[in-house]
Length: 321
Image (cartoon, rainbow, N blue to C red):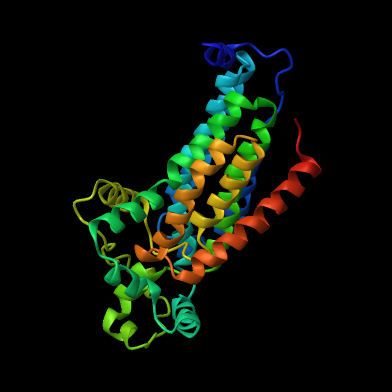
C-alpha cells in the first residue's frame, strides 16, 4: 500500500527538463536523420522512418507535459516505459540502413570455424534436441524482455533517487548497439545459413553473399521444441520484429550485462541472483537458437561492460539527479 501511495505522491522538487533517457532517444534520432540524408534514395521506407521520428518527438514532449502537470513517480515511470516500448520499433530499422552495405557474415562464420573447429549454432541444437533443453534455453532467451522491465520498476519503486540513472543506462545501451548494427551488417546464422545452404556451412564453406539481404529477408526457422510455450513466444517475437541484422555483438548479452550490473548496484541480492540463471541460459540460447554465432555472445558480454562504463562516464559528465 505504501509503494502504491509513493507512486502517486506529488514531488516537491520535480525534474524540470528532459531526462537523460529521452536525450539518448533524441540523439539517436538526430544521428539517423543525418544518415538518412546520405542514404535517402537507397532506403525502402524513408517516409515511414521519418514519421516514426516525428511521432517519437511528439510523444516525448507530450509525456514531459503530463509529468509537469502531475509530477510523481508514476508519470516519470510512464515516460521511461514508453521509450522502452519503442525499442522494438527502432530495432528493425537498423536493417533499413545496413541492408545497403555488403554483408559480412562470411568473415564471422569463418572466424567461428577457426576458433571452435565447427559452427556451434549448427551443431549445438542437433546434439541437445530434447524438449527440456529447448524450453530452458528458449526461456532464457525470451527472459531478456521482462528483465529490462523488472530492473527499471525495481528502481522506480525502491530506489527512486537512482531511477533516472538506471533508466538512462537501460535505454541508452540499446541505442549504442543499434548504431553498431547500422554500420556492421552481420545477419547471423539464422539468415546466413539460409542464404548459402547448411550443406556448405557443414563443409566449412562460407561464401561472400555481398548485398544479398538488400532484397531477401527469409531465414531458417529457429531450432527447438515446436510445441513449447517459450518457443512459441520466441517465434511470435521473431515474426513481429526480427530482420537479418544485429548479430554482432549480441545486444541480448550486452544489455543483460547492464541489467545484471544495475541489479547488483540496487543492493538487492535477491534481484541479482534471480537474474543470473536466466543470463546463463540466454548466453547459450543465442547460438542454440541460431540467432547468433558463439563469438557474438562472447563479444556481447565484453561490449556490455564497455558500454556500461562509457554511459556511466557520460552520465556523470552531463547527467542530472
